[in-house]
Length: 512
Image (cartoon, rainbow, N blue to C red; front, top):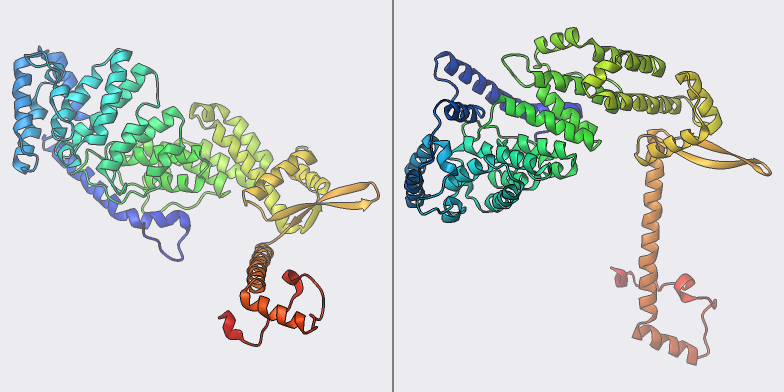
């Protein structure tokens, strides 16, 4: 990702993504024009499944094993290095009736047992995904989960890219198997493997990114997603992968939710801004939901609402403020203090619960509480816990115990959210108080520098001591020591050599 000097961190990401936005915008415009001409969308991820379902309802077809034999013969005869043959095969498979992929051969052989997933990846993909989507039995589902796991580790990525829309079916198939098995963890590993094989650098958006992040959210396993999400998307190509502007929006919205689950709020804000500021012909419901989370997460992390990029749709901002004043009021109440914020959240609790944002709203309260403590550090240098608790009670209109305040301070210090230290001071015999000392950034830097210099001095002393000991055990030193002792001479002071014996400094070249 490109970085620019003198630019706020939360906006750096946008400069590197402008090209992606223009690519997406052009794709949206081209898609609109094609639909106006009556040609439809040539790369609509939802079109193929809908068409298959409609065809299945309107013209039910019986499975013909003879047709399966013919298509298997075609699959096994194609040279995977021949581009024209592979394109012809992909076109033939796309026209092949869906029920046929769920049928066996005339000899009752399973096509998945006939085909090699590494050599016949494209054909294997069509048969596998169709059969997975037809499963309704747990035992069959387990079998196909193992089959998909083997396939994603063995397929040829180049072959699959001849039918990008069918790659999307891998995510659909795994999602279906997870529902049959009632195990949301099923899709996570195979989808992550498939993404890594389709995009080795992980910087290209594929049609499997959204199902993968969605699976992590449903399973509430947020950490496994980070290995993929932490790599910024730099390539968005609808001509290579079955993606659209909706794919882009959903990926960044779901990813932001994963980062929120991991308490990585700065990264979540970056992804939410990417979703909000992405170009679109109309206001997207995804962007509206991203805007809601953007306000709450920004209050938690920054204590304010950072400005959006200048290329963000003005229409979206006006629409949001007019239709969802709840979040604007909460942001205003945040700047007016904790009592106002609590009152605003209580007033709008029904709307927050409907949006599943009550948890984030409560975190806003905790964030404002921490912000109030930080502001005390800007005013005072030293306070007792009791004095600080009294000041907080006055500012927040609620009683805060010293024990609760101490726990919060220690947590903030541990997370590097505040520069402070807590010490116990004896004010009179048998009585002590706990003091909080706030350090500004310069003092904190000096303290860290002093600790580093002390550590360097300690390390240097150990090295000198080891060198001293090695010198004392050397043959030359022993001979000189025996000679001095035999002549009746002695060292000036009888002390342990490791600590106090002088080193011979007459010849500095020995230490070079």
